[in-house]
Length: 359
Image (cartoon, rainbow, N blue to C red; front, side, top):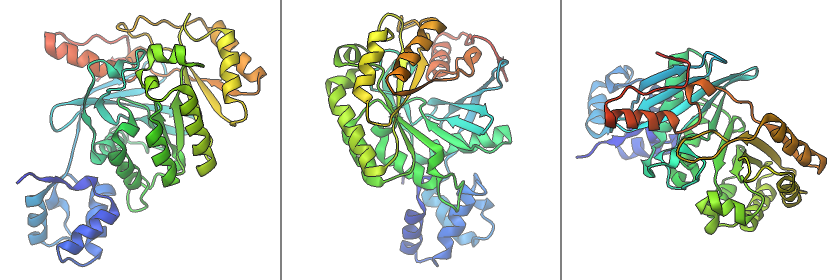
């Protein structure tokens, strides 16, 4: 009999399980607390449960765990990048970033990605599988245990498309924010999507208090289609209509991510066109100097070009900021460390990083 991942159960599911097992209702709270408050790795550590119940759980379920395979620390800003190895040997990444307002962890939601965005290292090699709710939770739990510091915010902007793993991500968010566990309010969570319109509408129905970040990266279909295959399914007009509907349903302002690629989408006329499309949405644009990834051939413009683009947006009434770059010396962009590790495993070479310390 294949064992079941108990740590991925929401509290409601745990209550249903204990009821089906004929257990008192309070057992659900005890088990949930051991998993998400005390974060035990073995059923025998659940000392307030009868031995017979512990054995019964161990026979049917397992407690998921991941391990740190590599840990890189930026010598510039202290950003920590983790390469986690999962139970089946696959690897994903997360990045712990330190800000004056607290610590933010960027996590992965899939092993690989099938969205095919050309500027992203995560999609090279495609999607292997979805992460479970417990694996996403363990990215957070492991970062806290390793750093000795609380994670104050979570950004779902690592490897994978979160809305392509919708059910597992919804379970993750429910457990993450549960007061009986980590109790991280969803206002401190940002979920990034390349624009799966049907899932944006499904997310709107949940009325969650998270921040939705949409990877736009172009002001029109011609440019967006060259780098983002998803645009063939949901074009810019369709995506922005969904964003307006999402805002109307939730009252939550949307943030748009825009990776500036030299000679592709960073001219003043691109900024003017983008501003015209976003006018009246109360949107925020997060400008991102594109990460240099060898396989893409894309390059970033100089700082003056980036600031000029920002000013063009602001002059037209669109709020825009330039993302602060963290961990540049440790390949902190999502997918790069996993890719290096996979290449090294295939060739037998030691992975080469761009700086920082490997611990």
